[in-house]
Amino acid sequence: MKSRNEVSAGGVVYRRSGKTYEVLIGKDAGYHRWVLPKGLVSKDEALETAALREVQEEVGVKAHVMASMGEPERYIYVSHGMRVFKSVYYFLMEYEAGSEMEHDAEMEEVRWATFEEALNLLAYEGAQKMLQRAQHMLKAD
Image (tube, rainbow, N blue to C red; front, side, top):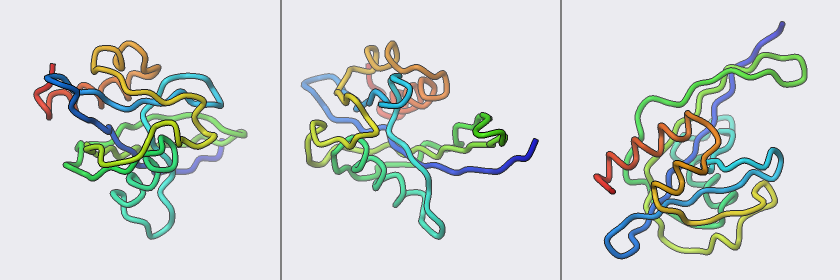
């Protein structure tokens, strides 16, 4: 089977809500599962730039990068008979402006959730681990 590498970037976008934090998650329109916003990095595009672009496109908000979330999420999947080795680089991002109602068609729904709610909703273990890493970085409940 032929194979290729694929690199994406995304973000864990947070905001304070009283004494707690909320994070932005989206329900993918293609496979109807809750995910973190992310997308392909264009040729010659910086990871951080791609992550900010994808967050704005997919979930409709502007944010700024607070920190890299370290080692990427890595997984393998098969698409059209090709094995894809995927690396997703995430950044911890603080919400600046915009509305989650302005999300693009890639997401059927976007919402703010507490860390606990988001951990229960996120469909994939890799995304859950990134969210737990963000929670630890923020020292949030």
